[in-house]
Amino acid sequence: MDTLTIAGKSFTSRLVVGTGKYSSPSIMVKAHEASGAEMVTVAVRRVKIPSPRGAGESRARQEESLLDYIDTSKYFLLPNTAGCYTADEAVRTARLGREAGLSNWVKLEVIGDERTLFPDTEQLLAATRTLVREGFVVLPYTTDDPVVCRKLEDAGAAAVMPLGAPIGSGLGIQNANNLRIIREFARVPLIVDAGVGTASDAALAMELGADAVLMNTAIAGAQDPVAMAEAMKLAVRAGRLAYLAGRIPRQMYASASSPLEGFVGR
View (tube, helix red, strand yellow):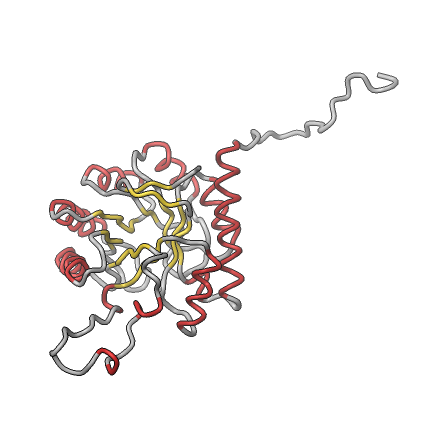
């Protein structure tokens, strides 16, 4: 079976989905099911941690938590540090997620610009080094810069997650050649994170050699999130198969599908 393996853990699905921007929790649950995903990312800052027994109101009266709608026996949780703008802030958030029992895995985000939401790669590298030393499995969201990806890998990242385009933009893969270069040299899984707008974008990411695609807005923001989730599942599978199959070379002129040798009159 063609499985995705990160830090010794294997997944049969190569699609990772998020939990934000859905119109309702029930739509999110249905979309997750339709996606076939096995890994779901959640923002640590969006998770409400239940109070311990005897410390305030009963669990039944506490505010609903996002985790109430995620079956952790079916989905592997990937906490993320969304909303963090410094290495120290991201490290503290990752520690909070681990202490709350979410996971020692982390999708590491350290944002450097509010408008583009591009990562601050200097702070990202610093946070990666710290969290790897502390035993975290770090999956950093980064730019599509092959040099930065190599440095993150050298720092101990379990995967590299370059953007295809700005978060939530739906622009699709903007720099295919950079992804090809990262694929050529990466010794850890390559996960395209951010920028996917529709199924063809996901298929292209996989055809370029990505090991997986992570998305949220493309599904949650679609007119029919459940249908789009299924489309993304199929696109990721198709793109992976096409990559493994090996496409034909591009050429300037036609090449007949049926050889002309042996035709009557030839």
